[in-house]
Image (cartoon, rainbow, N blue to C red; front, side, top):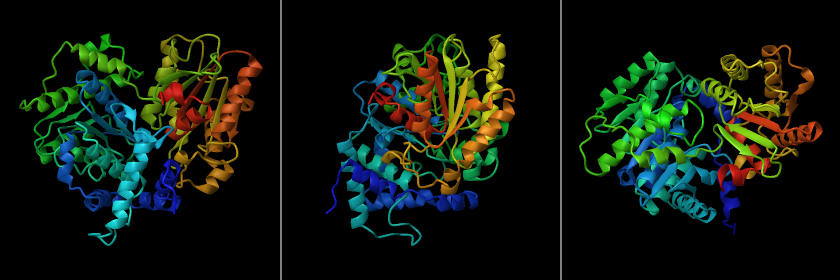
Amino acid sequence: MSTRNFEDAIDKLNSLQSNFAAIEASKASGGRMVQFAKHETIEYLGRIGYSPEDLNRLNVIHVTGTKGKGSTCAFVDSLLRSSDPERKIGLFTSPHLVSVRERIRINGIPISEEDFVRFFYEVWDRLEANDNRKYESTPAKPMYFKYLNLVAYHAFLTMKVDTAILEVGIGGEYDSTNIVPKPIVTGVTSLGLDHVATLGGTLAKIAWQKGGIYKTGVPAYTVPQPAEALEVLRERAEEKQSSFFQVVDIPSELDTVRLGIEGVHQRQNAALALHLVDTYLKAQRGAEIDKPSLELPLKPEYARGLEKARWPGRCQAVHDPIDPKSTWYLDGAHTVESLAACAEWFTTPNVGLRDGPLRVLIFNCTHGRSGAALLRAFREAAQQKLQAHHSTLTTDTLFDHVMFCTNVTYSDGTFKGEFLQKGLDQADLDQLKTQTELANAWLELCPSFSREKVHVLPSIQHAVKLAHHLRETWEKPVDVLVTGSLLLVGGLIEVANLTKVALDM
């Protein structure tokens, strides 16, 4: 008889991951395999005792996009809690940084290990007991993300949340979060080409997918987009018969608010969140919502909500609790656009350009992403910012050392259970192929950078140890920018013992 503790639940959850071959097959399909996600989720939902209509009781705020959707959801969550402290709010996001429990939050706090185990096994047991499948192609159990999505639905319904904020995984139209018949309000954050490899097609295709979350009679928001994407979103809102379609501008009043999530680009996410929450609260009070009506100046509770918002691992500065002279700058920026935003954030006087410290970069990107393009975007944005600040630094001299490591957690080649990745190319990992390519790309972009200060490392723990060694050797404060893969950022938080200060867990 197997035990049913948190570690056992994680083992079972990891068994639902796609392996490398399956991920490559999905990419090769041009996104066709993604199209099964929605109807499979409805089938699984029925097998655990719910219908899509049951999800309407969650009063959903639904958010998708290429970048900024997690931050937008964090702003929405904080705004709601500030506006109505008595409201019970569920938040479902992905991925997690340190613990899978982060993906399912109640009133801003990850659910406990006990609750996670309870809801995880209740879903597991119901699927085991009811194997009646409508489609022969449907697996007995859903894959990793869809399973956690089911656990979130079950947890939110069981705990009777008043509001559920759902962040789309990938896409929109076919995403497993997109089975709620009648959300209260929907929003699309900034779009880019990062998901083309997964979803297939052009930016217009991406916009078509994202616009799939719009619903009949439901307000549809977005932020300024490239022309081709905006036109498709507008058409999708009309096709879905949304109650209205609105492109959100950044109100000047945001200039007086110190956002709890750093980065100039967060102003756009905050503006979208404001409209989503304002529309949502008015709808909850029974008002007819046929056009956007955000009132200015901002209500005090809105300003407080924006100031108190937190989204760990994104433009976050963390002082090392053991070595106060070391500061970790964490930003899980994994797209060209977000890497440029990361560079803009770091290359400012009150962040990465302060005098005195040794500056170190730790970077990785997951297999299949163009590391050279990501580094180029970072370099170009950093150079522009350095010039704007009339800094004597260049991109060749901004960092004293750069490290390219894998997402493997520990130096013995093992992962923490909640970081295990079955979708890795083992040959790439063993040969450090991606990391070597990144190092070569860096040296090509920064030709005067010393080769001796470019490090290719097999694990996150190796990188942390080297950063500590540099601190001890130079006897100077060390500022370490950790960016690229969110898995890298989460792993470093774990290895460097930053969980309590970075995630307040």
